[in-house]
Image 1 (tube, rainbow, N blue to C red):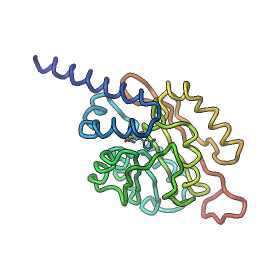
Image 2 (image 1 turned 30 degrees about the vertical axis):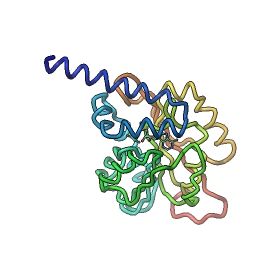
Image 3 (image 1 turned 45 degrees about the horizontal axis):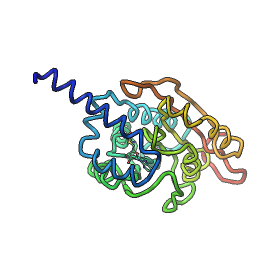
Length: 235
Ligand SMILES: C[S@@+](CC[C@H](N)C(=O)[O-])C[C@H]1O[C@@H](n2cnc3c(N)ncnc32)[C@H](O)[C@@H]1O
C-alpha cells in the first residue's frame, strides 16, 4: 500500500469511528465503553477529519469575555463540559484563559485532558444527561460544551444544568452538529428554557465549519441576571 492509500484508509477509519460514535443512544455505559477505546486515537482521528469546533468555541468565549465581562481573562472561571482529551482547553489557554475546569463521562478521555496541564481540575465519570451534583450553582463565568450536543450523546435538556452552574450574566457556549440540532429539536428546548427564564439566546453562528462532512451551529446563551443578584457587568 502506498502512502496515499494509507492516508485514505486512515481517513476512512477515522470517519467510521466518528460515525459509530453517533449510534450510542445517549446510553452512559455504551458511551463510556466507546470512548475508552477511542481515547488513544481520538485527537489524530478528529484532526484527520478537519475538526475545528474547539477553536471556534474557544474564540467565541474570548469574544464574549472581551465584549461583555468586566474581569480580566485570567480571572474568568470556565467549565469545559464534555472536555474529552482537552482540545477546547488547549485553545482556551492559547487565548489567555487560566481558570479552566473540565468534566467528562469517560475517565480515559478525562485523563488525557489532565495530561494537557491546562486544566485546574478534570472530573471523569460525570454524566451530562443527569444532574451535575458535584457542581454548585453559579460557579462559572463561562461554560463551554463542544462536540457533545451531537448524535447519540447528550440530550438538549442537558442545557438546563449547564445554565445552573453558570453565574447570572455569564455565558453558555455550545456547538450542535446540524443533523443533531434538527433531529433532536434543539431549538424547541432552547425556546422552552428561554420561556422559563433560564437562558437567553445571545448570539449564533449558523452553518459554521465543524468537520469535513458536516457543519455545525454555534450557540451563545446568556444566563439571565436574577432580580436581586449583585453584578459587576453592565446590563
Ligand atoms: C466528540 S467528543 C468531544 C470532546 C471535546 N469537547 C472536543 O471538542 O474534542 C465527545 C465527548 O463527550 C463525552 N460524553 C459523551 N456523552 C457524555 C455524557 N452523557 N456526559 C458527559 N460527557 C459525555 C465523551 O466521553 C467525549 O469525551
